[in-house]
View 1 (cartoon, one colour):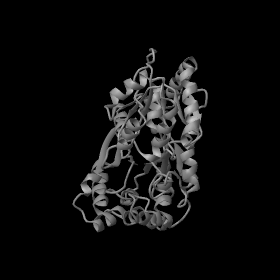
View 2 (cartoon, helix red, strand yellow):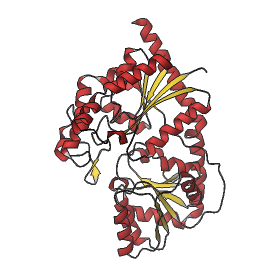
View 3 (cartoon, one colour):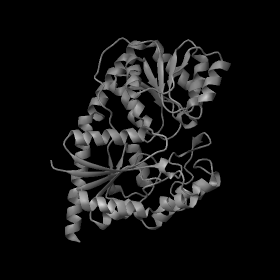
View 4 (cartoon, helix red, strand yellow):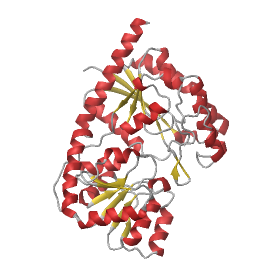
Amino acid sequence: MSLKVLIVHNRYRQSGGEDTVVMNETALLKSNGIEVVEYIEDNKNLLGLSPWQIFVNTIWSNETYKNVTKLLHQFKPDVVHCHNTFLRISPSVYYACKEHHVPVVQTLHNYRLLCPAALFYRSGRICEECYGKFFPWPALIHGCWRDSRLHTMVPVTLLTVHRYLQTWQNQVDVYVALTEFGKQKFISGGIPREKVVVKPNFTWDPGYQIKKREDYVLYVGRLSREKGIYTLLNAWLSLSDIPLKIVGSGPLLHYVQEFKRKNELECIEIVHQRPNSEVIEMMRSARFLVVPSECYESFSMARVEAFSCGTPVVAPKLGVMGETISDGITGLLFEPADSSDLALKIRWAWCNSEEMLNMGFAARQEYERKYSPEKNYQMLLDIYEKTINEKIVNNTCS
């Protein structure tokens, strides 16, 4: 079909999974003949701005409003698809689109609209103290964003102002949650039920190859507390005969190195970050992937990449993981933040390689059913078409 899409995204200072998802989704649209224009900002451009300028811009960016308005006139998109708008772009993008009667689709990559820190995680545990509060004051008390009360004023004010203006209810036509778990969270948090649909992320198909697995377990991700690094390492105190490759970097990198040295765990190899192509090859060869997250993941790309390689996943019985991994079918589930239970599941998986191979076959089938580029493109197209048609009907009736 002839379709014009304006993609809006605010890159993070440290590029992560969300930036990759947006890049892949944009490439998917272009490869299917969709005309795409991108409006991209980068939080690296905040350097040099005063704290007051950043604060005001985050709540409402006049620059975004003017630039997007100009693009709407020049490009005349059928739909605007927003991803991240924090900090440079701001919700002013929605108002520009509303003013020009262009429908807006917003993908919910994290929990920012419900939690100032976007994670529902604080001090090593799930935290929902701000959930459902019009003014999310607990985040200020705890300094949840960047471990600073002053910095936390930015997302807290953003949420409060735009809740008062009813921006989230009135300015966005459709929200895309990545899982059913996420959908229910956002609906309970105040996003209109009729506006929320579910479309998972996808990953490119690496091509399925049945190959002999090498003798190691793989972790891929950020080395931080909410990702369950403490739980992972403590589990390995009783798994010293099982090789573990840790791929990634983050604030706990030094801790991981010291933990390995102090406990003489030569079985742990710290690989640091690698190009995605190399990570995929490691996933192809690993016995299984372990994802020990202790926060509500909005979506785990590592899990889907593992599924695409026919690699089963060991993960916690928590939120998205409990929803998207079938225990004993596409992987194994353990009790969240329980290193002993994780160790038991790892030991069983290591000693039952045939069963894990069968789970890998099932994981690959799950990828083909839900997470392939072809499936994702059709889902995305359906969302666009429905959003555009409903906007036309509403504009006609008004």
